[in-house]
Amino acid sequence: MLYHIRIDGSPRGVDLRDARLHDFADIVETPTGTGTVLSCRVPDKAALTGLVALLHDLGLDITELHVVPEPDELR
Image 1 (cartoon, rainbow, N blue to C red):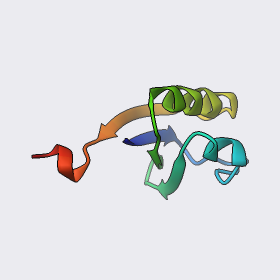
Image 2: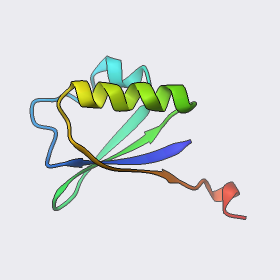
Image 3: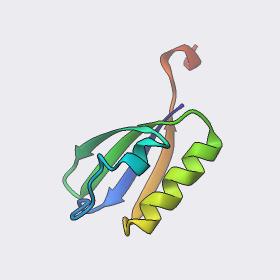
Image 4: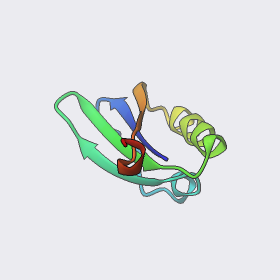
């Protein structure tokens, strides 16, 4: 399942290529005007929970998290 996780500001000092993050999800980082959006494809809810906990442990402020419907789910 694909999720977008919005982080307040930029992830300064945090390497989003960190292997620990990729244990939970495939992540693509997109800077925005007020923060950063992480597009994360996770296999299940347990991986999502682990990813959110790790982002928190890395000191990142999550301001938004939502599911992105897959094209086949839109029908």
